[in-house]
Length: 203
Length: 203
DNA sequence: ACCTGAACACCGTTCAAGT
DNA sequence: ACCTGAACACCGTTCAAGT
Image 1: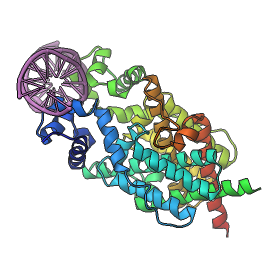
Image 2: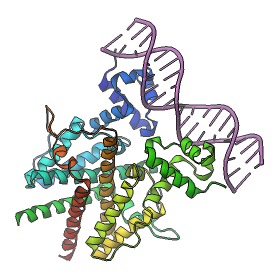
Image 3: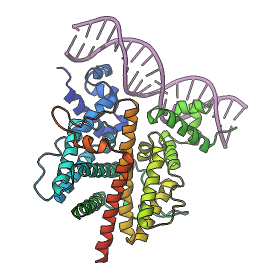
């Protein structure tokens, strides 16, 4: 029973979910696979290369079978899918942020986003830039959402809305609110921006 | 000549700029300070705690002395300041993304952003959420911009606009363009979104 | 083709003991 | 109060040698 690339990625994700990114080591992964650490380097040239494969696994299939609807609905749906896909795995957003953006599934998601925006009426170049902005927002939001989650898990999260010397206005408004709602709010803000681009083009 | 917290942070940043985050180790830092590794733990409880201090250093003073102008101009100016502050140090965005968001200077930037949006006419809660969205965009964009920079440094950056099996629409439009321009475009998109919020409120 | 054994050159962190 | 010495329990990666 030989080791397969897919198998390695699967077990790596299991370890990641169980113990987090900082605890995912090549040695522990090898042990979990019943193999010595050096064997992994036959299948992956390095740990970053393995993380690339893991990240691409996270976004696999996200661009497929998007329900029909307006471009607004499709954009919202795809954005939510990406966020949920990253939240589904511990440190998922941090893993994706650290990887090379040219794995096949990552490209697919990017392409789909661009296509939706082109269908909305944006020219190719503008659609590409806008898709890039949207992806960066999703990534930034989800990294922070998940960082907060990890800190809460360790009981290390308690930003004070008001300390003695200064108030923390973000803690008072955003940090306490439901992350899913805040995420949707941000997507809405971007949609409004895109609509403005479209009316600018029509003039 | 005893070691000071500030001194430790300064030398750590020098090491970071020279060799990158992955090469910044407590042992090398100690050596650079002419001290043994254990000594650092008198000044910082852990490596993450040191990184918190470094990240907060990066955004120090950014909220101060913002030129007078419309809320749009102030928002653009502050956004650019944050991006530039992170770009000024190797892996700056990645460092900030990994740290606890309750260091004093980080709070100050957040507060300033909320204030600008309140002056624009948004109610407190909405201003907080919007500020959060803006910060996440800046963070997401700058992480990716800097990741690309690091890859280019190693000659490992070459996403193909067209491969044999599929085209990469983001590579064809966004990746090749000037990151500063793309950043400004995203900020503009967000500004349009905020303006829409304001007109919605006025109805 | 795929894996082991064994090494190389490192890590972060703790803590008694020193000054 | 601040630092050293020395250890503990690890890392990622390489590569000759085995099967």
